[in-house]
Length: 265
Image (spheres, rainbow, N blue to C red):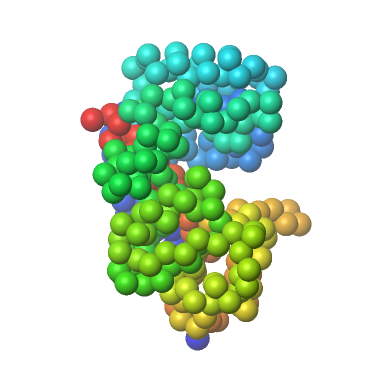
């Protein structure tokens, strides 16, 4: 019997966040994937009654110019600021993220805000990890006491998600490219989160029967989107699984809107 597909779009719509805030997005260059993400964010803001503005800087902009734009927005009436990732390689990502006013950091990437997440007293929650936790709860999946294994240690997903699941009383293991016996570690998971950035990397061999599998990956193979999980071969082993697209992605945008509404209070 195939596992239940977790419909992230349905849960995102059910949240129905509304607010009177305003989101300013800074885009450096014209990365095609970034333009798609920004289009989705604009549409979500429109549905939620949240103002939206895109500040598109040339790809060759200096780091100083990008930071100057961020500081200009810090001093404006906008409620939330999001610097679209990835930035061009000549720009120091950390310096730009740290230039954002923590009170307007609706992507929750500033070290101050991530520190509050670790201490379970966050002003904002990182969008993708928060969307994952919200989905698990909406599906009635028990987190307390369960063993969660996260494959990926990024500052955007892996690390903050580990703190958030710990705050929900899960036992958490973080795996990465240097982890020995990775498949064996993954097979211990009650909740397995794939955020490694490699298409269809997590095969049935990595998953124990009845596990919950959350696929964070977004990869394009032969012109089609796929996740980090070999969905077709894994779905028959699990109790729940998220698809790509339509799983984690809509929840990430929904949590961004929730952060924007909070920032506008």
